[in-house]
Amino acid sequence: MAAIPAASRTPEASHGWAVRLVRLALPCLAALAVSACTGGSAKNRYLFAEKLWTDGKFSAAVGEFEKVVQKDPNGKLGQQALYRAAMTQSLYLRQYDEALRKFRLFSEKTRDPELAWEALRQVGEVLFSKTDQYEAAIQHYRALLKQRPHSAEAPEFQFRIARSQFFLWQFDEALGSYREIEKKYPRTPWAEKAALEQGVTLYTRGEHLPGSKGAATETYQEALDAYSRFLKRYPASSLVPQAQFGMASCLEEMDQLDAAYHQYEALLSTYPSPNVIKIKLTRIKQRQMQRSR
Image (cartoon, rainbow, N blue to C red; front, top):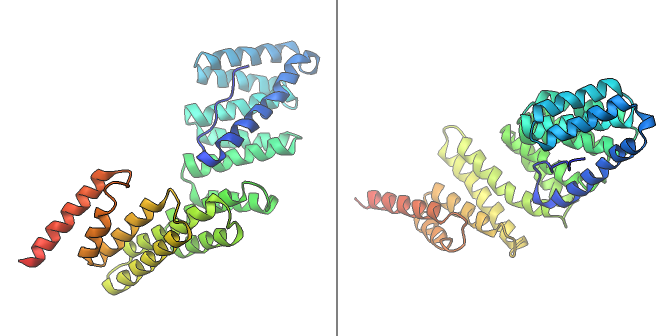
């Protein structure tokens, strides 16, 4: 059968994701080997669906996978077809509502708890990464954390909860979630990311504060402090340029233009987008010239 392509995931999880997908394909291979378990018609349709999928005819492949599910709804081959249809609709057809329905149905039908878990992970992927359904993503990931609080994916799930809260402008809740990650998972890459995101969250909250410049300045100072803490804790992190850029942005918003200029200038050789730095330097120069008039 054709290999199932990996879903869009974070770099930290990509290897484990590929391994799980290989494992997921094993029941299908077993089902094909023992045709008596399914019946020839379902088997032939499955093989035809895989041929269509290999040829890039994803919509037609999904149609054939669905026919396999109808013929073998409770068998291994039917369940594998259900999952394959869901993955194809999620990855290639952007049919997210149907993908969600199939992933959830698969998680209920399969007797393998690991495969059920993988399907529920995919539900979270669609809610968080594909459709921006952040309220639903928060509830889904909380349910997964309750189900397996000590799973290897727990830090990532907690991080996605925090990011969802951030996207919903629930800044206080997001900060609490990021701090919880640092406390519960201090030796993971997610703690490092959570430390940086606290600065990002505080800076963004400053941008959204209405009216009072004083309140915004206070929040930018909190963000500056958060970025400084990050640099002290993770001086060798690949995220250091982002934290330094965040500090420069805070200084700029606080009208500390000389300090901001020097901070940006120091990033010219290290920041991933040097043109952004050049634009920032030009704008600060313009503001300084206007002040001097």
